[in-house]
Every structure is written in C-alpha cells, then in structure tokens.
Image (tube, rainbow, N blue to C red):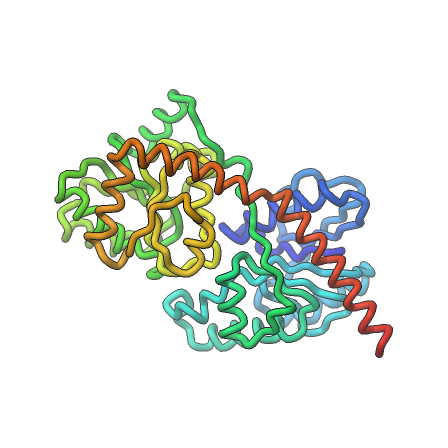
Length: 375
C-alpha cells in the first residue's frame, strides 16, 4: 500500500502523517509500503524496515502534474491501496483509495482561504474525493456532520477515527529545563498559553480582550501566544497596545516540539478561544502535559475536551475572563481539571488510531474487490 506524504513538512497535517504512518508500520510490519515523500523528507519517517520503499518525486501539490504522475506511480509500483492523509486524491484511480478529510474549514471559514478561485478548486477537488473515495476518514463526529452537510457526502462512507497525541508532548518536570526555556522566550511570570498559527477563526483577539478583563478584575500574569503569527502579529500587537496590556503579551514565533512540551507543562492555564476546529489538538496536548484547560465550546472542542475542560464563550470577554480566573486561582478546580485532563488525553493514542485505520484499509480493499467482482 502507499501513503501520499508530500505535505509531511507542513505543521499540523505533517504531525498527523508522521505519527499515523509510524504507528501503522509498527502494527502491521507484514505489509509492503510505498511512502511518497517530498524532496528532502526521506528521513522524516522513523522505523522504516526492508518492507518500506520511499520515493521523493518532484510533484507539486495542487498541480495538474500530480493528476498525471501519481496514477502512473501507483501503477508502476503495483499499489493495491492508497491513503492520502490529506483530502487530495488523483482523479484517475487505479486502485482503492482512502482519504482523510480533517475538516472543511476553507468552506466554513472563508477568511482562511480568501481566494475565490482557491475555494472553488478546494470545493471541487474535495467534492470529487467524497464522491469517489472508497473510504473517508475524519477526526471528529463534528467534522463528519460538517462534511455530510457541506459536501453532501454519504455518511456511511465516513469513519470517525480520533487522532492521537504525540508521545513527545508529555509533562516536563525538570526545573532547570523549564527555567531555561521560559527565560529564552522572555516569560517571567505565571502565564496563560495559547498555541497555534494566526487565523481569524483562532480568535487570538478574543483571548487578548478576555485577558485584559482578567487583569482588570485582579488577575496577574502574562499571556503567551506560541506559534508563527506572520502578518497577524502586528495586528495583535496593536490590539494589545490599545487594550493597555502590551507589556503582558509574549509572542514566541515558531516553537520546536521540545520547547512546546515545556510551555504546555509550565503554563498556569491553557486557553483555547478558537471558533472553529475540526479536532482541537492543542487542548488534548495541554491535558497530556498536566495543564488545566479553558476552552470555547465551539464546533469539535467540547467533543474532544469532554468533561476535562472549563468551557466559556470566547466571544464574551467577561465570561471567558471569569473562566480564566477560576482555572488560575481555584486550587480544587485546578486539581480536578488536571486529573480529568490526564484521563481524557489517554483516549487519544496513535496506537488506537492505527488499529482503527488498518481496519478501514481492509474494508476498502474488500469493498473494491466486491465491486470489481460484480462489474
């Protein structure tokens, strides 16, 4: 079987690809695998044995060329199943194909993809995938409902398989390591953490407004925005200045995984004010690191967070600020959230994800064989 891993260098989707494939290789080493990687990505998958072949073709994602060359690669290597852990599949399909559609954010949140032509292409290609893929995997029941609603997909073809939490993101208790990391990022006080790229739906602005109210009502500390903000950083800095909290806001820029585990572990509270998430990796990662979570209840977040988060409306600064204050200063609540958080995070393991995904592969091959026999 083959994996299309050409986007493995991208944040988010790349982590999903790496962790899933490595877990599948461990659980089913008897299979033969073809890993289609980007140039320079040949060493990104660990644990490759003699049953694994890697290739790195110069095929640009979202290109006409991929529609010609990917089917040729599949035929040449006699691939009996392709899994694209992103939604793109070749229109010509010489074997059964499984696609992971993590969400339909570009349809739900137009600001994520301002180009009308881009949205048209995205809808067309994703629509083709839901119509012709042998099986579709998605990350949450919320995303399944959204895919069915927005793309008129057959719900029977969609399997919800929760992703796992990267094993590198676990609680760090080494005080020297924590102090060195915090010092490197200029963090000097107790802090609220929010990790992720800047998008309007991520609602960084809502967190800053809530944090201003948190400070105004007696709270103390810093808010740390971890991740690449790009042009959004200037916008958020201006907002922080207008709110009078510029000196309390830390922008880390890109954070490597080793540092991210420290930032999660040392945070007083992890805040997720996002308005749209197909899964919500960061709240589970924070829970795995033993940090109390305050979250919006929007889209998939309550499904993923379960009873282990404190939920509040992130579009209401006063309400979200009160939740931050409770999670910051109430010892009993903090202990309860941490204990529940560990239990909730244990639901999401890559081993379990791989087990369920391998079952989908088997079903896809059997469906294809049955259809071929009837034809």
